[in-house]
Image 1 (cartoon, one colour):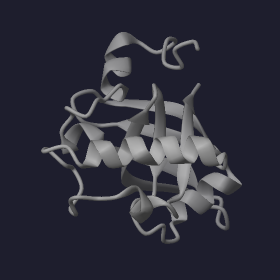
Image 2: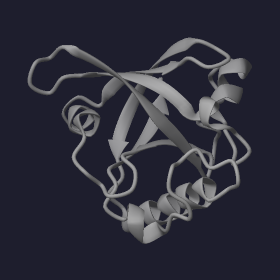
Image 3: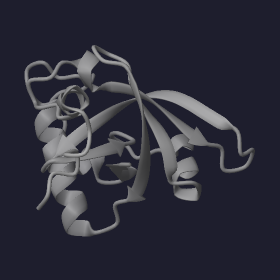
Image 4: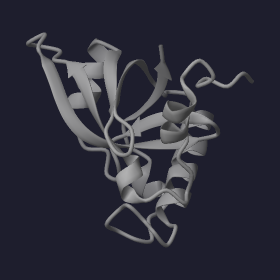
Length: 142
């Protein structure tokens, strides 16, 4: 499988290619979506995750409704803003993850990552079943 980040400059690739050793700060980005009702830009701070060489956004344990998820479902093109260490505004595209095998693998990787000693989350240990209803988006960078 080709590297989905190969077209990006190396310093930007390094910032996105976080591993379980990454701290909380390295996992936080802003995203700017287009409001599904207003059509206006909406910028929020959010954690991003990596699993099997792919970048994801996930709503977290519990799977409650989120504006960013609804906005990306309506308008999947958005901006991924790196802001810690390196600053960059990356055009990106979100795809809802509906395949059950991919969802299970990604959720397992996220939970594994969150259960590391440097855990960026607030509840530990966390379990895959806690994240089963999470909103999950695969991110591709233009």
